[in-house]
Image (cartoon, rainbow, N blue to C red; front, side, top):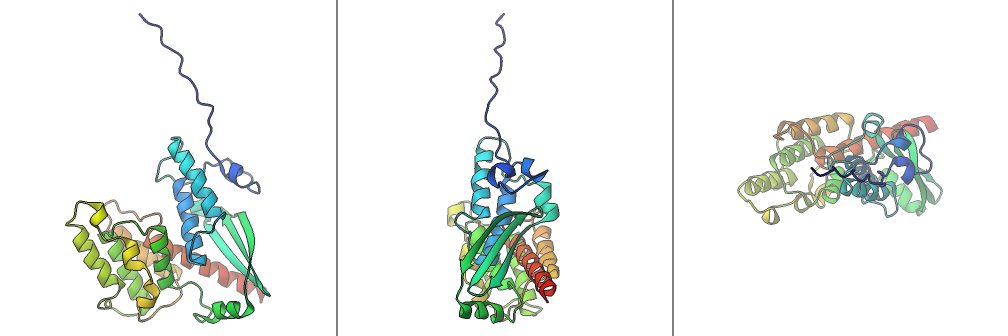
Length: 266
């Protein structure tokens, strides 16, 4: 009878928030960075700045989450409760010729950096959509960046339709618009078995804002409506962590934070 060999314990440990961000403390510092945490920050960065920032919080979180997933410490769909409960947020404070970007997770600042901005550009940014914040169309465009390679499914088409209706104020979808294109893509994709041949979200949502006959700033009610449409049409009654509903929710959250900050500065 052979003697059982003792199991070798791995000295490798998961990468935690405290390892990535030195400013983080308390309970959050001991949390393992999870993939959906990173996806939430990526969505927020795309909604606010149009792309994931090199060296920004999303990039650092994605790198840590990928290493944790490869090492088996977390699953692909894992998420921490603190980012979900307290939110992932990005705020921008405009100063003369400069914009200060602050990124937070669970109420704690994880990154802050400045951007040089021409005064004329700042004025255009403030007045471009009436000072209302990130629009629904811009949130759809952000989805093309965060989940652009995802094949269009019925849940995506339903979310895009809900977003378009809310953006335009119409009760029906726009012929030839993003919602109509998404529905056609979902119908075609359902007949295909090879994902490489399927139409992707990036194909539908690139330049989505310019394809809408009307657009407006995203609100919490818009986010709830889009999320409900996406969930009702998903076989597992869930939303994609970096999909349409997530982008609209991030835009709405950032708009609310900006409005609150502006009111406090008055």
